Length: 116
Length: 114
Figure (cartoon, rainbow over the protein chains, first blue to last red):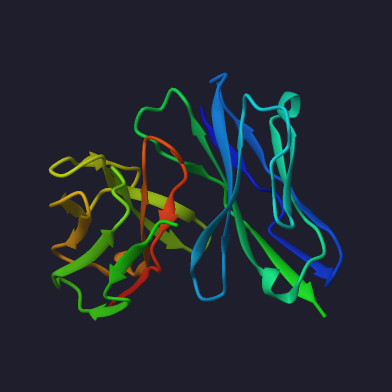
């Protein structure tokens, strides 16, 4: 069965450092899409970055990048030069190409705390 | 960037009350979704739709109805609200071309059922 697991419930780091959040997924589909979303303290959910399973290069957007390890079914989110405003809950999600209904399967989220 | 709006942003009702949550997206997306978010459960899909008049059941549909009246508008209906439906509700939309699969979220509606 499809599943997305985020084992880190909370991470705390000092501002301007680099942090990695883990996500592992289970799928029987050979093609799938992986996403990271951020939920701010106000509750807003914002799309950050995606990785398509057929792409070997790790996606990068601004100070977000992904560490895609397909053999390990792992998609880590790396935030470099963290800022206070990066404090939020980060969700990993997956969609299988075979799912014609475009449903996302969500992880439970990791709370990131950036300390000054 | 996709624009998804929700109303009301906050709602208080009593047990047995009738509640309608509204969602509008203005980016011509075909897919729209209703989620609820509760502590310890993350995001759970209630209903979704891939076009006007279409409705699909999600993972936690009990106690909810939904209707997609136009491509832009998707409504979530709680006809006999219960305290267990106190939650944060999100609407999202996505398309099936271009940036397919990427869901864009509205700001959320906080519902309290007393």
